[in-house]
Length: 83
Image (cartoon, rainbow, N blue to C red; front, side, top):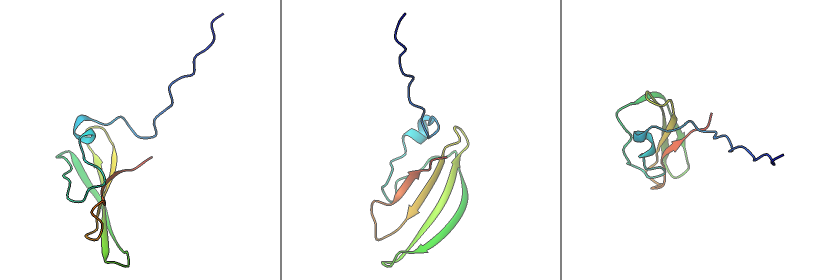
């Protein structure tokens, strides 16, 4: 008998298409790509100014993204959302 090998861990995020894999995360003003469809939009007061959040979904691979625009935080920007 051979010992069983553990299976590869399952990914929480979907497999990303090439354009989604190329999105620079956590950097304000980084571009998205043409197949992202805009969803909901909201604003929050962060104490040092307002931040706006816009959700997107990729038509090609189905990945869910959120873009944070916060002028006080250069490391805001694109974030991949988990399902």
